[in-house]
Structure formats: C-alpha cells, structure tokens
Length: 120
Image 1 (spheres, rainbow, N blue to C red):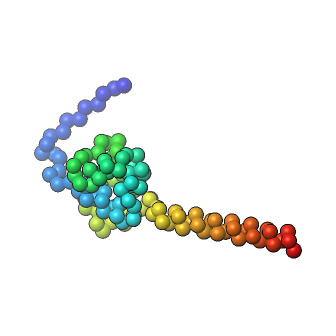
Image 2: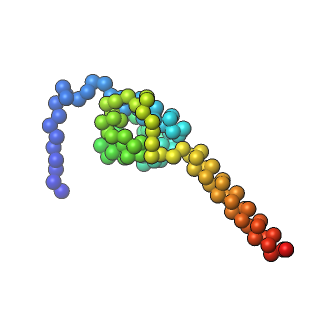
Image 3: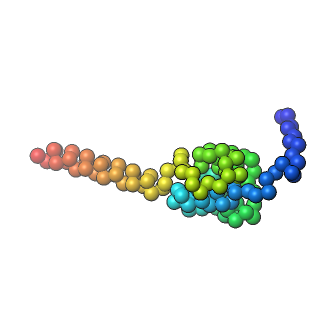
C-alpha cells in the first residue's frame, strides 16, 4: 500500500467550520433522530452528538459517507452554512412508514377480496 502525505498549512485551513451546525440542521430538516442518522453514517449516536456539539471531528472516511448520505459535497458540509439549502437523498422515516402501512392495507384488501370470491 502506497502512503500519501498531504502538506497542509494552518493558514489554508478555514478558521470557521460549519460542520457541527450543518449536521444538526440537515438532520433536523429530515426529521431524523441522532440515532437514525448515526445508523445511516455507520457510527454510534454518541459520536454523532459529539460532531454536532463540535467536541469531535469526523475522519475523512466518515466525511465522505456523510456527504453521500446528506447529498452535499464535503466542502459544502464543512465550509458553507446550509440553512437555505434543501436536503435530498435521505427519506424521512415517517415517509417510509407510511409507504409500508399503505402496502399492508393493500395486501389486507387483496386478501379480503380473495376470501370473498371463494365464499361467493
């Protein structure tokens, strides 16, 4: 495995990071709990809480996963406030639940219709 080194100067690193605010905001816009979003990221809920409070910083692997799950670039996640940007690519759990309930209702109706035909 080839090692890659990055030469980063502290003057190149932005003084302000929007990461913690953006994670919390985007999670709220989707109506997700910390537990639900942490599962999507593949991390523990407590670690997501630490990211949201600015007590910890995610690894590059976690940042990549966050970017994919939230549907924004890593640059947008870290360097740009997301307050007015719509969130995409992550369905609300409630929407998923409604779809499942509708499917169950449909299946029940289908079963009931089949039973009526056999009795008639």
